[in-house]
Amino acid sequence: MKQLPFNTHTIYFTLDDEKIFELKSDYTKVAVSAIKSPSKENPIMVLHKNQFDYAKVYLLDKRNPFKIDEETAKVFNHIGFISDEELTDFIIS
Image: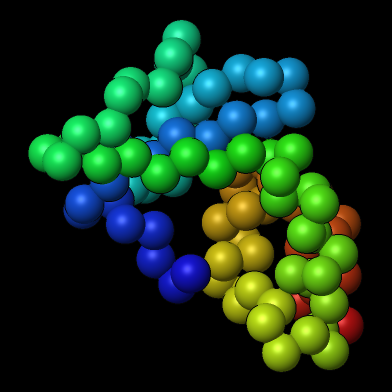
């Protein structure tokens, strides 16, 4: 996931506290009260931290041929899915 599809999708994500954010193309996050319904004209992508947590160990395993790349790890760190310590360990190890 080198780039998120900001030019074609509205991207939302949820954190553990169930807050919902819209992710902007500069990776700033804006709190929203609800996820808009998708349409052909306005497709959406939703990332859930609790779902990511199930796969995190697998995705951050350097021996895994399907691991995420460093750029993607930095994005997930920026939005709060990966801690600073996890990111450092992933990049250094």
